[in-house]
Amino acid sequence: MSKKQIAILGSTGSIGKTTYKIILKNKKTFEIKLLTTNTNYKLIINQAKKLNVKNILISDNKNYLIAKKKYKKSKIKIYNSFKEIKKIFKKKIDYTMCAISGLEGLEPTLDSIKYSKRVAIANKESIICGWNLIKNKLNKYKTQFIPIDSEHFSIYQLIKGQENKNIKKIIITASGGPFLNKKIKNVSLSDALKHPNWKMGEKITIDSATLMNKVFEVIEAKKIFNINLKKIKILINPNSYFHSIIIFKNGTIKILAHENKMEIPIHNSIYGDNTKYYYSTQDLNLTKINNLNLSNPNMKFFTTLKLLKLISDKDSLFETILVSVNDELVKLFLNKQIDYKNLLYYLNKIINFKKFKKYCNVRPKSIKDIININHQTKKIVHEIIYKKKFF
Image (cartoon, rainbow, N blue to C red; front, side, top):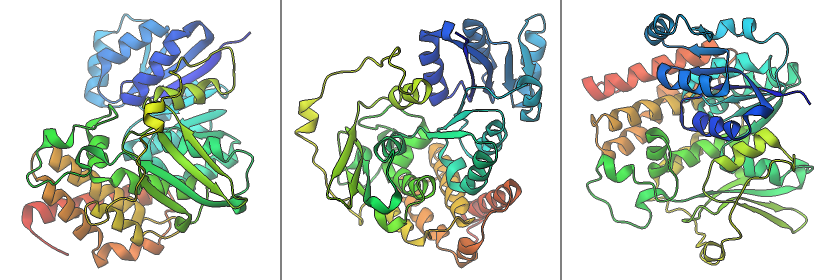
């Protein structure tokens, strides 16, 4: 039996490391064609040695040059640009995990589709900003796509074999983050980073605190499953046991639950229905099932949810603006340059500028359009924060 050929884009990040650990358990089953990182050359070299990987890519030029010099006697080939992947992939590989965070992950994701039979995408920004470009490439190269976000993976599982016309409502659940049902005044960075259920990167943890991650997940669901926004609803589920609920027009309701572990959607995206490789999981958690405490989110508290009213059912560059404004403000908050109150204030204020709303009807035609509006938006955010210049 031939080995399954795999690539992990962003193997040193949170999702990438989880994917790596899953593969490591049965490494004889796989041939890892490529691992990539931005700066963490020490970790990726270690990963490559343990998995016997011949090709790695370090996109940050400074760290690439350091690694190239330090490991010049190694048999591992070190690349610096995603344009070089055509040297690595002579034919389509079986699976690519696209786990590079931020908009930096969009171009590598697009590049990888041509060379993959199946791509798993764990990058919100790529889907939100460039879904029409991704979809065109998926169709062109007949590549299968699997979403890795727990909510979208759950929806993907629940609607298999169903037509959209049969779906009445899609419900995405939210834990409510660290501030659910709490009166908050002075929020510290450490407070905002204390997620009650999930261990994630800092940026996504802040998005969970503001519930901006759910704004993004609704937009993702709209795009991935071609569902009208009015059919998508958010419910608070504090223990994060249910990940999505589908209400069908025939009167039936499907619910998908699993432990708060990203290993589960990743494991399933790699192995599918292969019964040889089971995921070892706990039995049904009756305590969580009996204490679901589902409720509607408090719109006065989670003000970010109001931003969904600005989103249309059509793909547009406004969605890139939404991502870019949030990215920059969260970065400023993580660097303690603005406080939590100002994070929420500027998030709502800047996105509502007339200057940006005109992009609601402008569809991205290329990755260049997305990159340009991303740069312009971040520049405006900085001018507002540092120069108090409002548009």
